[in-house]
Length: 31
Image 1 (cartoon, one colour):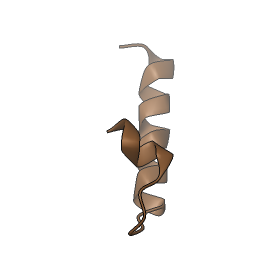
Image 2 (cartoon, rainbow, N blue to C red):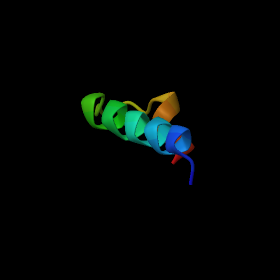
Image 3 (cartoon, one colour):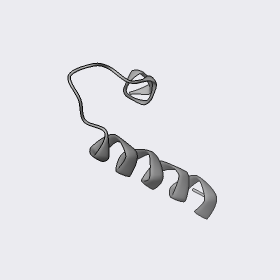
Image 4 (cartoon, rainbow, N blue to C red):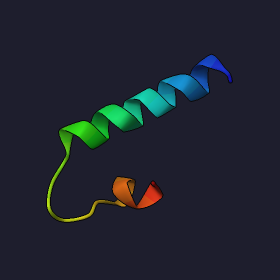
């Protein structure tokens, strides 16, 4: 796994945790 890919995954996870809401978001649809 490259460093860049790892950083992207971490950013996505952080955004997911910060944007938890009842309505689905485009990021939540990726999982």
